[in-house]
Each structure stands twice: as C-alpha cells, then as structure tokens.
Image 1 (cartoon, helix red, strand yellow):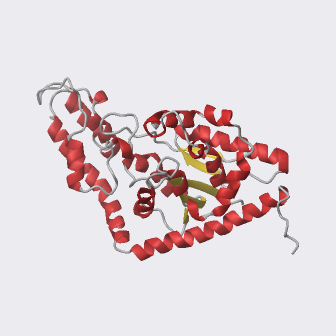
Image 2 (image 1 turned 45 degrees about the vertical axis):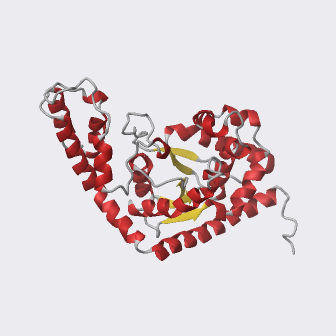
Image 3 (image 1 turned 45 degrees about the horizontal axis):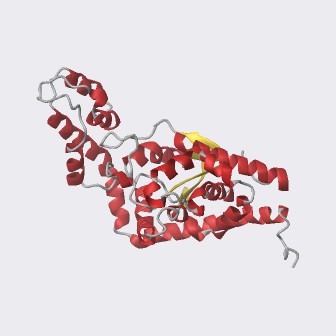
Length: 335
C-alpha cells in the first residue's frame, strides 16, 4: 500500500497561538500517524514581507519548532526542516516561474487579500517575491512529492495554483509530478479576542500557546463582551461575546449552561472570564510543560531540526533528479 505523503508548515514570524492550535496543529498531531509527514519552517517565505527584519525571522525559528513539539508532534514520526536549507526548492521555484503568468498570480484570491492587508508595507509596489510566493509554495509541495496538504479554506486557491503548475509541467515534460489535494480540518479560522475574524501575531489579539497565566488573565479580562450588558444581572447575548466564543473552545462540557446563565443574567462577565482563564490554563498546561522541557534542551531542539533538514534534502534531491532528467538538464549524468 502506498504511504501517504503529507506536507504543511509555518512562517517563523512569531510564536504560535491558539488559532494555530485549533486551526491546524491538532490536525497535524492526528495526521502524523497516517503517513510520512513533512513540516516546513518557511523562513524564505517569511522574508517576502519581513525582508527588512531578518533577525525576527531567524529568532522565531526555534520558537515555532518548540511550539510544534509541545503540542505533541513526534520528531520520530515527523520530518521538521528549514526551507532555506533546501536549495532544490529554490531551483524548482525558478523552473516553475516560467509556467505561471503575472496576470494569473494577480488573480489569486489569497494573494489579492494578503496584498491588500499589507499596503502599509508595500504601498503600490508589491515585490516580485511576495507576488510569486504561490510558485515557491508549489515548489515546497512537489519537492517532497506530497499529495496531502492540510490547509485552511483561505489557502485553497494556493493549492489550486499548485495543481495548475503540476499539470502544466507534466503536459510539457511528462508525468513526473503528482497533483496535491487540500485537506480541510474540522475547525475554521479562530477569531481574535477583539472579535476580529482573524487571530494574528500582528493584530495583538492572540493568546499564545506559551503565554503565562498572568498574560492570559490580562488578555481575557480585556476581551470584547456584549456592549449592551451594563450590570451583572442584565441579560447577555453570548452570540456577540468573545468570552462565550472561547468557552465553546475550552469549556465544551458546560458551555450550554454557561450561555443559558448569561442570557438569564445569572452569570456576571467577571465570573465568566475567570472560569474561562481557568479552563484555558488547564488546556495549555500540558503543552507548556512539554515546551519547558525543550526550552531547557536547546541542543536537542537544534538536532531535531538539523537531522530533519538533512533528511528533507535527500528527499528533495530525488525529485530534482527526475525533474532535471525530463527537462534535459542532466548534462553530466553519464560521467
């Protein structure tokens, strides 16, 4: 039976938060037992909009890896690797760039949305690297012959663009590459504490997996609640309260009762927030204990990434050998 090949990853622009946890990390922990999983720390992609702050990218590589290990991803089952240390990805990106038009990149819904969000950085002049990152992502996927790609709904256009590149390459050079399939988890994007549809590192509305109880308390106590609720015994509307929203994530056993008490004015916002803080800490404590283990063992963390990157490079080299053969770029193969 063919072994499934799974690829996913993160940009090292900051520590991972509960949006990552419910949106993707939980799925990764389950999928690590279903096949060969590669997890990329996408430092090159992070530089597309952090080109002027390489220290930020480098400093977060270890943080992102420790967060991944802390949630239960097993380095004996998962190959963790650094994107920048796999030159084959860069080579494939160059080859694939000949197969995609500028107009097609500009039509990509995900790219259009992200460019609009980063107007302050780019102004009216988007960089070649940022506009073309879907091509690089196609290289990430195909370098490891990955066919299952866990993503959120907002990333589906990127997977479709990768599939287009694969089809175009195969139609010209022969059936070498395999089309990937997007894997959508059960959970959708998690909202921020401020009610924003996106929880983000740059938006200041996130609870990080490594946040202390003091930090979580401060954030939850400032979370957006029903603005019409003035007094403790006023009936509340859980549907517009971010505390109730997070109770759905962390208090599933009694969230129905919590919401009913809120609607009837029997539960004050302060008490509701305190219970949420307690439940969040109970959920995150085992994760933080594992993270603390790795924080005290930096050499072990470095070795996991070093060994994984070496393994990933060997896998990418196999793909590159096949690609160069069909592209007639294997000039010295017979020597």
